[in-house]
Amino acid sequence: MPPRVTPLTDPEITSSSRRLAWLASDADGVPLGSAFLRLFAKAGQEHLAEIEIAVHPGERRQGVGGLLLDAAVAAARSEARRTLVAQAGDGSPGDLFLAARGFRRVLALTYARLPLPDLDLARITEIIQQPHPGYELTHWDGTVPPGLARTFADSRRAMDDMPMEETDYGTVVWDVERVLSAADVIAKRGELLHTVAAVDRSDGSIAGFSELVVPGDGRGDGQHYGTGVLPEHRGHGLGLWMKAESIRHARLLHPELSGLLTDTADSNAPMLRINDALGYLPTHKAVEYQLEL
Image (cartoon, rainbow, N blue to C red):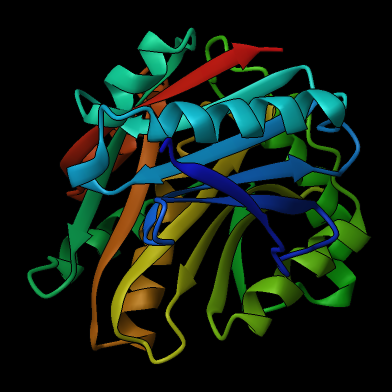
């Protein structure tokens, strides 16, 4: 008998997305694989869905992944989505599967890690102490302070032109409500959000930011969520400055933290140079695939 695909109920619903789920099983009910379809809900991304498929290694090449994908594609179309995206490790079985199923490569990513036990903190501090006339650094833990909330939300457009090659992610619309909601979601997961921002001294507005999320117990690896500088403030070294301060802050606040993780599009040469300058070591590569529905 062919595998049976059963829709599941996924309780993970947030203000920005919801998920549909499926389980593939054999005639005896033994799980063979699963699929999750994330349906984005925020303005600017209502066209987008993201698929994650996992099939037990011993059950691959038996049509399980194809059945799960067919169910997810049908659901995405019924939800009026025009774009379905997926990520896989470069050269992995998932990479080959997506290419064979009509997806096209639209983005290449490099994942990197900064090991903290061997960090040269003196060198990081030297980078931070370099003068940046007209700017100053500020930082906060958790939710942005009320006095900075509006200018911080406005600064999120720094990510609008981040190199994404042909990926149809749309334009994410940020306002104060969304900034506060994102911080709340991270806190409810039991994780810690640290933000460093560069402030334009001429008017007190935020010119750029760098976000880092750390496990609640301060151990393991932290994850960079994004570093961006507004176009009108680029060319002053603010990205390197802010990310270096984020590293220093994490190292001093969480001495048991093992490392910091980041991922960068291969076409984002400025951020790759920043990562290299700060000592991040590439760990693996991944590819983003896209299917037009």
